[in-house]
Every structure is written in structure tokens, then in C-alpha cells.
Image 1 (cartoon, rainbow, N blue to C red):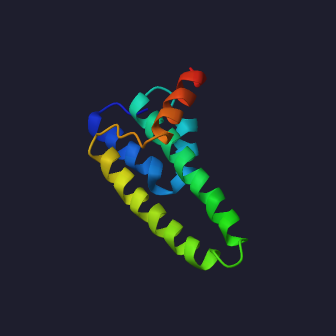
Image 2: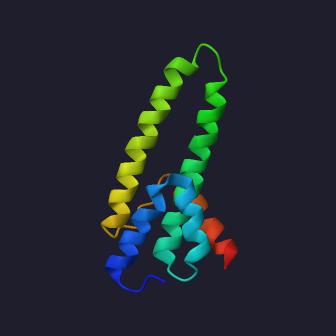
Length: 109
């Protein structure tokens, strides 16, 4: 689907735009471009995991007032940072999550 470098950069950034939801969508529609697929998988794992942590933290009385705003800030900073890296054409790998994303993509081939 993505043929030009600029197109793949835009698609990589869009894989983060709606967090894990757009990551899943790009994994389903982009079957060939490794750059786009990597960013889609990293988005799905990163923001899916943070979403689950955010939901669980919401049920923890006492610490949810502190933890939820911190998690929200982390998610927003990561969201902007990862979209910028993908749009810049960089295959930026988050620690741990980037390796997991690569391994999952290798299994899907």
C-alpha cells in the first residue's frame, strides 16, 4: 500500500494517531511495508498496554488520583514523540516494546 517514502512516513505516524486502534487498523490494511507494520505493531502494543494499565489504575483507590494523571501525561508525550519519529522516517524502537513488536511481526510472516 505505501509506495513512496513520504507516504510510508505519513502512514507510520498515522498508525499512532488513534493509539492502539489505528495500530490495529494499519496492521490489517498494510501487508507489505515493514516500516508501517513496525510502527503499527509498536503502537498496538504500547498504547494497548498503557490503556489496560490505565483501566486497572482507575480501580485502585488512593493511588488512582496520582497515578492516572501521570499515566495520561506519559501517554500523551509518547504519542507525540512516536508520531514525530515515524513522520521523520525513523524506525524508532521503544525499549522492550520495540523488540516485542519486531518479534511479533516476524511470527506473522
